[in-house]
Image (cartoon, rainbow, N blue to C red; front, side):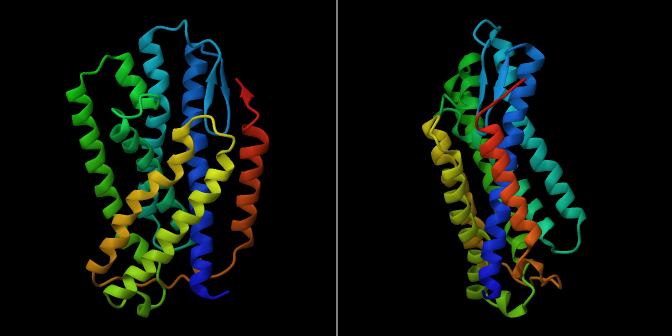
Length: 265
């Protein structure tokens, strides 16, 4: 395989790992909140079943619904902070980039879609709190603005994984490299995640892997407008990694073999 093909493959695998971990941590947030408030949660791979939630007060249901998005927000902030601390453009740093943006996309995406998807976490909160429509719209607009800004900020960090100046030397090459490290991995990764999400529990959960990645179009388009990209000396993203591929296999086994049947807390 050529180097750019390995860049696509490695970035796609890192995307899938980051996406699955984001899902697990998000649902774990709901489950732990459910344990605390006595909802008898059953943790599955992409949802939590609360066996005794109906009898709980509305405000407790709000806390349980908010727990998942708040965990995702914390994930996005911490992973982003760690990303900025690491200097070498390693596979782990690329994972942190995906992990951070996916955590932020989870939280602010819920804010953005709250008025539309009432079965989503924030949609449930709006319903439980009887949030006025105008306030829902304001929150949704703010969530969208922050999310799009975060996506734009992904442009330069993603291009800095290039270790050949020719890959980022002009507008066309930069956009092409962004296609290889962002867009193709998103499309490939979203397809695999969608398969792993089966069987369908809710329609939104099956379309989310693709729709959540729409924000990656912005850094791809924006790539041609940035200049003076500092290329990396780290070439690992363009080489095969047994550890990376093995990590994906182990995570898939856990995701489908352990979490999908459900863990009772």
